[in-house]
Length: 129
Image 1 (cartoon, rainbow, N blue to C red):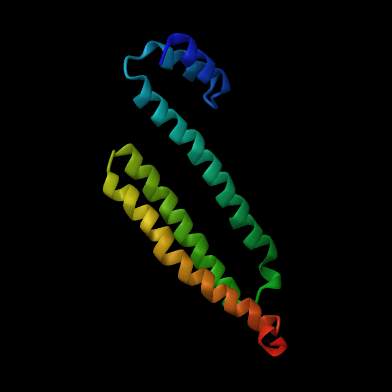
Image 2 (tube, helix red, strand yellow):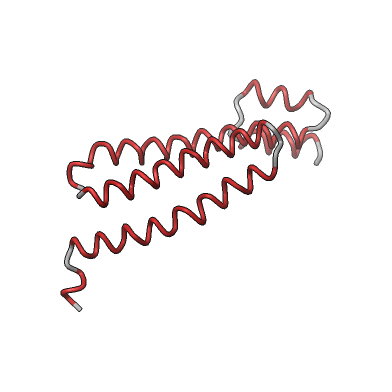
């Protein structure tokens, strides 16, 4: 990438000003960028997680115990996967990265299916058919 193309890319980048300046100084720009953008993306994921977590807390009064239990399980799995992914990144352990993704895919999808059935039962969806 040419210097001018890099500078144009950085103008639109989410990196902080000091990170952009540092990136211009390092020899392995791609590695530096990948590491820094990872942490920006993690902050987005954590913000979405905390919004979900707080929504559950604020609205659990409207959930029956079975639904509360399932949402709490999803909450726990998501937080565990986020932590695992961050630690995997810091340790440069690709196996941990894969494990975090697998945890989301294999553990949350079945819980989501249970939640759908519980909500349909609560709404008497099966009576309409």
